[in-house]
Image (cartoon, rainbow, N blue to C red):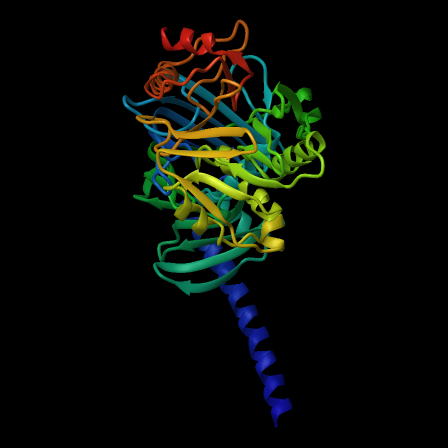
Amino acid sequence: MTKRFWIVFGITVILAGLVSAQEAKTILQNAAKAMGDVQSIQFSGTGHNDALGQAFTPGGPWPETNVTSYTKTVDYSSRSSKEELTRVEPPNLRGGGAPFGGAQNQVNLVSGQFAWNQPGNAPQPAVAAAEERQLQIWLTPLGFVKAANENNATAKKGKGGTVISFTAMGKFKVEGTINPQGLVTETKTWMANPVLGDMLVETTYSGYKDFNGVKFPATIVQKQGGQTVMDLAVTSVQANAPLSLTVPDSVKQAKLPAVQVESQKLADGVWWIGGGTHHSVVIEYPAYITVIEGPLSEERSLAVIAEAKKLVPNKPIKYLVNTHQHFDHSGGIRTYVAEGATIITNAINRPYYEQTFKAPRTLAPDRLSQNPKKATFITVKDKYTLADGGREIDIYHVDGDNHNQGILMVYLPKEKVLVEADDFTPAAPNGPSPAPRAVAFTKNLEANIERLKLDVQTIAPLHGFVVPVAELKKVAGA
């Protein structure tokens, strides 16, 4: 009797799956008919976009720039898209993201597995962006229907309509809701993020209108990590708009650069670790090592850790000083927790890190998720001194900072070196002058140096390169 029950139950489950698959196919066919079964689409509008991971406060909204012009053209058959936008920094913007001042034009492209930017005549390979840009094609309403048809989608009843599920690009779980009118109202997927783990990407589509025979949403809002990254008011749509992209040879040949580290000795037992876009500082104590900053990713942290142990053999890394919670400066701190280090950070960051450390990491497991370990913290409010065996570093909160509310700087009084992130980035020779917002950051940093009466001779920035303090003063006086 029990055996018969399980056989019947199994057959019922299989039949339910077949019914679900057939229902999905029918709903998708109706959706394609309702919205317009086109091969390409171009939509334009205005709105704003927001810098992921660059919140002024931990857990706060991503800083918002105004998008005064936006056009995206998507060709589904060639799996290509071209995104063109102009954005403007609003007055009194607080938070991260590279300050640019005035208006900034962007052209972001993807064709199959290749992605690049076209800020001028010379294409710039964007290897790391290719996968997400390709995925975004299938998150558009019409793209979602086409991808679901190609990937054995299933269906179930949900709030507001039918929830369609499938796997895109062989790895991304995608869900979307199609309402009774056959319109896609929402899509969801998850992407790996060094800070947030399996990060939710949710896009809502509302206010559908008939644009010359094609039904398309008048409002598109995408959130990543629970905060808005794009809010677009669509003003025009063109069906079957032409898009013919030729992938430049330089883009075809480009590969993700290998992680490199280059150490520069600043003083006895103090090294600045460069070699990439984001830097760290290694400090030797009598019985251990302290590292300032764990940026970007686990790959970067592993390379810096290896260099630290090469420079200072047979000593453990006991402390990792984290200047602030922006993703590009905190993406590698979990690796130091796995290493056994204590994280020194602003007190406002601890609850945020404790929360994000709990997030699932199935898409890109890291060392800490594979071998869980409870993180330990030392929190800083105004000042914390780490002194041992004649070595001292003073960790200060930077008051009045508009880049990040909890940002810290590190002063080495004996060496007269200041380690700081984002408030002053030395310009490359013959490079452009810093944007007004960047100058304001530097002025505030100089004011803090003067307030604390720090005798700084050398700036060891976590972007750019090591310079005399005169370079900072030159920018602050601009």
